[in-house]
Image 1: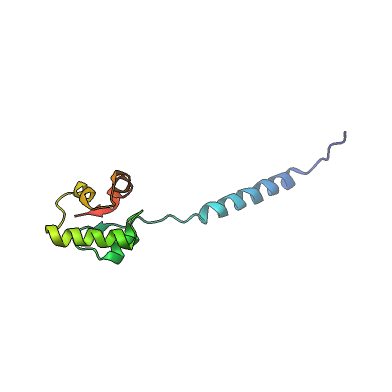
Image 2: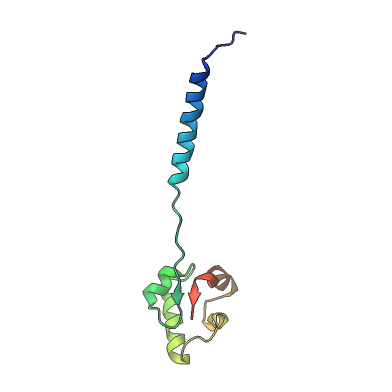
Length: 98
């Protein structure tokens, strides 16, 4: 078996190119900003855009609940809205304001 002898500068250049490819990939990662939404003032569109697992129909139920009951006094009160369960609340707790 024959070994190819490369100059140290060539080996360093290969490592440098690989490092640049890796760092370029890391820069391309997009960090999704977490949006805060106020249950007592947000529109249907804002609720459905900000809350994971909440589409326009569930967002409409949230607004209807708010209008019928005078607003939310706790985040956990969201569980009283039909179609909103513990899994949805857990996914969104950090996004909700009152």
